[in-house]
Image (cartoon, rainbow, N blue to C red; front, side):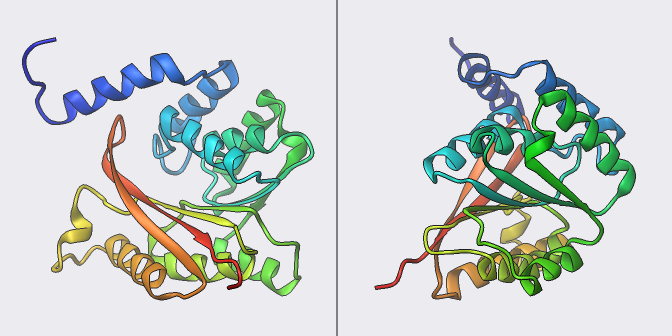
Length: 229
């Protein structure tokens, strides 16, 4: 193929190339992705390649217990629930009841409702209840909710982890805004706080990667909770 695509066009073309060859979406996943239009944040779910990536990471980690901040239509939740198998458990937080109803229907359609606990309400309150309970540690945590609360979510994730737990934070690039020191966007400030904490906390080793594709220019942070020396 000759020539050069312009900007996002080539990102989308490459993403589509990979998705067509590497990602298998059944009817339930397609329906969940498309039903995002009926949620409080339409089309904010991860892309098919990102969903598959989460599933692969869950399998690499041998995850059986997953914690997710931000359910939306449940697209990423389904990928994670399928990756952990029928004996696994996903706890996922969603603030909006109408959106939660969309996700519940999608879980049933995908055949994974029995391995998912959807908790409705502010995630800061929901996760505090888990920390106070306490509950068994999680093997993988996916942080993809309201960005200003990222620091609180990371601290709770660490409290609910064990050595070897994988923690992933989504949307850490925001079209490059993370590198703008003059940004007044509270979502960017929440991302800064997340990155700073990941870099400073001795309990976790982490890095961050930029991504381009159907979701534009963004990225994720990924870390693993350290094992004792």
